[in-house]
Each structure stands twice: as structure tokens, then as C-alpha cells.
Image (tube, rainbow, N blue to C red; front, side, top):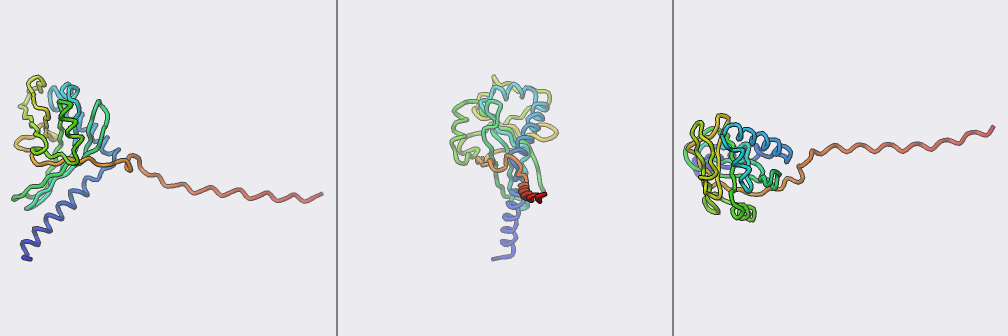
Length: 207
């Protein structure tokens, strides 16, 4: 194998390992981050609070990290919110080729506006944007408000950072897979050592 091919394989494997290890969050950690990210989304995007209430369900990925050099991989963990409660946990993954370097982070919110769209998403074993369903990304200018009456797409997505909505990005090809976080719902506590049994009292000497 040529040296260039070896470097390419190393880049792919290293990227996947780094990005995967960086996002191994517990259920409690995801819940906290989702709550904070949802608050930021509502603060940064006008009309988002009403919009989310009208959605049948929505995904929140607080931190989707993209790393790479020649091959780029991105991943992040989040949760599906239905009726104001966490329904399931999900991981998003995507890959891309081309000259790229460093690391980038973004937050993603995907809203399901119809029950049919939500049901199809939840019944899939690995829902892929652009294949299993289209995601209409919303670009809002400064000062504009989300108008749900004019949004007729069944699945609507937002990509944003600390400074608001991000543009010229896409979710095309991103895969969303349900993950089991039941074992990490609570931090394990060290088992306490058993208390020693009391020693039997010695018989008193007869007077």
C-alpha cells in the first residue's frame, strides 16, 4: 500500500475514533445540554418557542462536532422531545471528502411538523436526511420571526451556533440512529462495604 493511502486510512480511522470518543455522553449529560441548547435556540431565534410548541416532536443536538483533514466526520448525541418530555436518545453521523482541517462545532434542531413524519422517523433503524426524508433548512435574516403558517414542510431543520443561525450548511446525508442510554441514566455509586457483624457477648462470670 502506498504511503499516501496509508495516511488517508489513518486520517479516516483517527477522525472517526476522535469524533466518536468526544461525544460519549450519559443520559443526564444529554438532558442538561439539550435543555440549555433549547433555551439558547429560543433566545436567538424569534418565534421559536411558539414554533416548537406546534411541532409534533423535535430533535435537539447540542453539539455536533466535525473533525478531519482529507476525510471529515461529524457526530453528536441528542434527544427526541415529544410532548415536552424526552422520548428517545439519538446519535447523528455524517462524512465528507475534500480539503478540510481542524474542528467545527454546531447545534442542530430538527422539528417534525406532522405525526406521519415523526412516525416514519421513529420507526426507522437509521433515518438518513435526503434519503428517508427531506429536511428543509431555515435561514432567517436578522430580526425576522419564524412564521409556522408559511412553513409547510413536514420536517424543518435549524443549524446554529453561539451567534445565531448558521448559513451555507446542509444536513444532507446525515444519519440519525437511536441509541440506548438506559445504563447511563444515573451515575454508579461505589458499593458500600458490609458492616461487620457484632461479636457475640461473652457470658458473664457467675458470682
